[in-house]
Length: 300
Image (cartoon, rainbow, N blue to C red; front, top):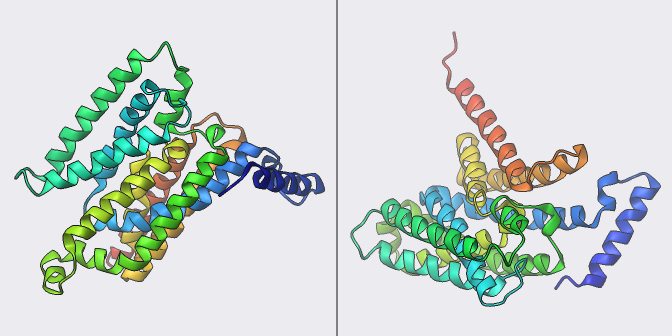
């Protein structure tokens, strides 16, 4: 776990480096260091999962989970949890949301995007209604931070939660990533090889849910799904193998997260961290499209 004493020691060491002139000035601020630590954990995590999200065509699901976070936060505030860290209700509601959606996905006859659209709309309507009812009890800036992300709000508790989720996710991906990828590409072949396809689906849903909720503070509920998709989409345009697809996605997601956090702070630009991260990812995707078109263009 990341204790306050450990963070204080790190902050003091970095401040000494800033004073000596061999570190950037922005690292003298504790909130910037916390946000960059969160970015170092989130970038590879979102990148690794993003490859599966794109292959499974589950981009809409991650958006739905991000929006469901609003309802989880509202429920937590109603139950007396601290508005800045309502983790019990946030994770509890979003996990139930994801598991129920996945359960109904194969049992209703509805297309996945239709079912996800229904869940997204209902959860967003419920969350916004509850938050409006609670408006007198909470600071409106808390809602802005949840929607769009804020580097100012990341603290030691958030980093500890993120560290635990990172460890669990990496352990799960290490054991099941290849199987999950095969099940995503060709489910009948995976079943013929006696792989637990249904269990892999539930594991994937759980991992996406946990990582999405953990990233809400930095990237924002509205935008977190985009970082699961855009770096992976850019990497798929440039990759020549599954291995390069995975590592390019991890590199792109990590770079966009860190640049999106650091650049607005360094240049003193009042842009939410989530928006800056996604704008960086969008620029990277545009560059990947241009490179792909140039390579595909026939020589004169």
